[in-house]
Image 1 (tube, one colour):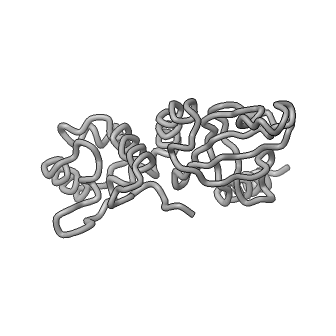
Image 2 (cartoon, helix red, strand yellow):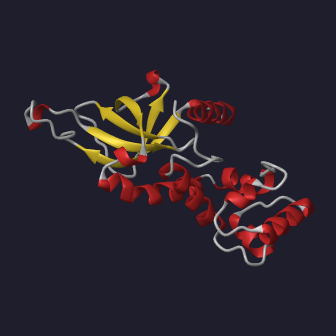
Image 3 (cartoon, helix red, strand yellow):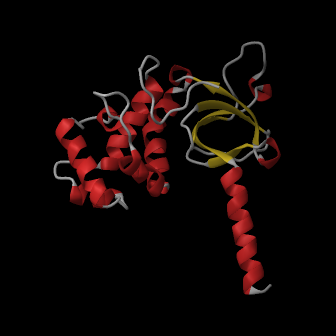
Length: 202
């Protein structure tokens, strides 16, 4: 294979992956939920997962012989691209298993760290919501002063990493963790007025 052919193949693979919807497994229950009407051996394996793009939560079913573990990244769409997932349906935070709820924070942090450019761009592109409220003010711990410092600094040049945000904004620590806290709040609370990161129910 020529260098050109190899490059084309890699690009095609990247393009296909970009079209896929992925979820991170929060909990895997090999024998499914307890059902007194069915023997344990006949109960369908299920899992709980969080979608990487819009942070929706799902209960997923798998093919019987699927090898799935907590923390795995699986394709949930399009249908023809699935390799292990048989189906899925959206659920709320309260429907997650205890393990799923406990793993949620780690999964959100992993999604943020693995796609840093995407989440740093929030600090570069956040906009006013109303005349008095800015998207930046929705982040925990960011009041008027830090908001204005971020807006002032990004006029001088966009942020390129979380570490650069910390260096340029005095008093703003762990910008990735701040985003994770907001995302978790949007996932857990159903009555928030504004959702920036978590998509509404399908």
